[in-house]
Each structure stands twice: as structure tokens, then as C-alpha cells.
Image (tube, rainbow over all chains, first blue to last red; front, side, top):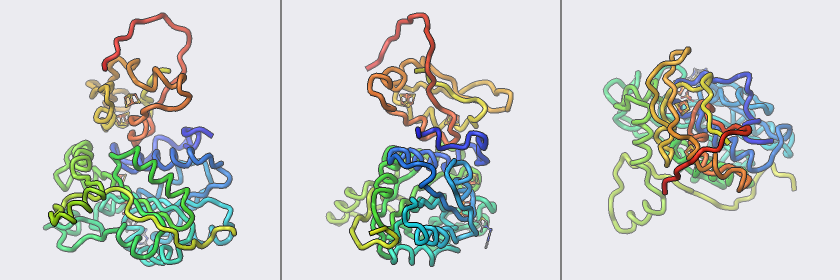
Length: 262
Length: 90
Ligand SMILES: Cc1ncc(C[n+]2csc(CCOP(=O)(O)OP(=O)(O)O)c2C)c(N)n1
Ligand code: SF4
Ligand code: SF4
Ligand code: SF4
């Protein structure tokens, strides 16, 4: 199969708003899947509920669009029932870290052989822009009209601490790096977690001084800090500004995986 | 190969104009039938992938296709055509 054969042409254009970063993440994931040379019969896409979770509907392979927050739970079932299937989970930040938070950390602990791609738009996109566990401090949303007072979750830190074998973070601007990260995740036995920060112009950008789609992409570009550089800065005792996004490969280890045929 | 934007998919977000090293995509000026202002292509034959895909047997660069959230950018085979002179910028 070639890269564009993974899309369901009859379903496109998709329902995402103009400039929504979810589309970019679908491209990058499918490009990585295509590089792996997998066939559509052996690949399964699973998702929960949210804008991001609509992604599997645009892909020709078998998919499961499950209940809110439960994508990883369903994916675990698929993988345990048939370890030969290649299971990829698309999820949103609310889906993964709010309602599905426990499934997430326990899947990391079990180190089950899944690849989870989280499209983190830092907001509940589908339901109209409520604050999510990853809404940055001070950001405006419909439920935080004076700016979010809470600290945001570091999803990658959570996955790494809970035991995932591979953890990486990129943004929808870093397409080449994102493809490589997803590909490494697909190759890694055990739980792989790839967080892709994406722009949500409709519900996040509009309220947070990113008037144009491009403004948020420019922000990702100028505020991305490679993890190696961040480590160096920490060693030198320099403070990393709060609005910087640490990107790169954040964990890679070799714990025994679950759900891999011996 | 020829670079094309599928007007039935493009939603006019202009992200492609941001990433191309040759600045082939330019913000459009007129809305199409669907009310979308599709970017214009400035001498698309300069695109690395248009020129070299066949030689290398794989997609080169391709950043615009990857970042386009609406899967609107692709390359199509060209038929026989008139030879044209192409100036390549380094
Ligand atoms: C059990 C349950 N609770 C709440 C909802 C309502 N709901 C639908 S989508 C959504 C938020 C999705 O946010 P996120 O996962 O960040 O995805 P996004 O839309 O931002 O991509 C919520 C709360 C639901 N569908 N089911
Ligand atoms: S609401 Fe946000 S996340 Fe949902 S489709 Fe629109 S831009 Fe994308
Ligand atoms: S990135 Fe895609 S959808 Fe956006 S303007 Fe360019 S061709 Fe259109
Ligand atoms: S493939 Fe690269 S060079 Fe060609 S149009 Fe796209 S971004 Fe420009």
C-alpha cells in the first residue's frame, strides 16, 4: 500500500475545522505505518471520543470508535485476544488524561504492546472549549474565563514514570520528527506513547491570542526546546522558561512487554 | 510530477505557505466555489519532489503534504508536454 491508499477517499474532506492540527497528525501516523509496510488487515486503529478520536473513521483499516476515555481499555482487549494485530490508538488530551487517565497509567505499567498517539490540543475541542487537564496555566477556556489556575499535566512525564517503553513529544509543526517518533513507537515492543501538540484554532487559538492558524504553529516553532538542550540548560543551572515546550525522545527502555507473541 | 492542490479538500488554512523552502505556496486572493481561498502555486515545477521523485524512487521533502491537515496536496504524473525552461534557485 502507498501512503494515500490508507485514507478513505469517500470520507474526505474530514469534519475538522480549517487548520486543525489533528489532520497533520493523521498524515504523520499513516506515513509511519506505511513505512512499516503493514497491511490494512493486520492493523487496527482504536479511539475514544473527541475531535481527535474521529481519526480512525478516515482510515481504510479496521477501527473501533469506543466510549469516552476507554480507547486504551478496548485496545488492550484487542491486543490480548490477538497479539498478531498491530494496534494503534488515537486519543485526545481529555480522552486520555481526564476521563481515561487511569487506563493510561495502567497500560503504561503493564507495558502492553500498543502505540498511543495523543493529539494534545490543550482543550476539550469537540464540546466547545472547556479546560482539560493539559490546559496551560493562565490559558483561557470556557471553564477558565480568568485563566486556568491549575498546573497542567505533563503527559510524557506521566507515561515515562508509569513505565512506558517509548515516550516522545513533538508538535504539529515538526512533521518529519513526528513521523520518525511514531515509527520508532511502532517498532518498539511494549507501550509507546507519542504526544503531538496540535493547534485547535476554533476553541483554543481563538481565545488565546492565536488569531490565525499560523500563529499557533509559529508559537510551536519558536517555543520548542529539544530535550538534549533542556538537559544541558538544567545542568548549567539555567531556568527553562515556563512556556517552552520540551520536545524529543523522552524515554526509551526495554521493560518486558505484555501482549507480544513469544 | 506535478504538484496539485485538491480544491475540493483544501480549507484555506495557509499552513502550506509556511513550510515550503521554495515558497511555492502563496496565500490565494479569490474564493472558489466553496468559499475557500485556496493558495496559489508559484512556479511549482521548482518543488524538489516534482523534479526528483522519479530519480530517487521515493518522496522527497514532502513537508507540505504532511502538514496539510486536509490531505489536499499531492503530486500527479505528467503527460507528454512542451519542454519549458526552469530556473532553479540554490
Ligand atoms: C462519558 C462521557 N462523558 C463526557 C462526554 C462528552 N465529551 C465528548 S468529547 C469530550 C472532550 C474531548 O476532548 P479531547 O479528548 O481533548 O478531544 P478533542 O475534541 O479536544 O480532540 C467530552 C467531555 C462523553 N461523550 N462521554
Ligand atoms: S474544535 Fe478544535 S480540535 Fe475540534 S476540529 Fe475544530 S480545530 Fe480541531
Ligand atoms: S495546508 Fe492544505 S488545506 Fe491548508 S491551505 Fe494549504 S493546501 Fe489548503
Ligand atoms: S514537497 Fe517540499 S519543496 Fe515541494 S512544494 Fe512541498 S514543501 Fe515545497
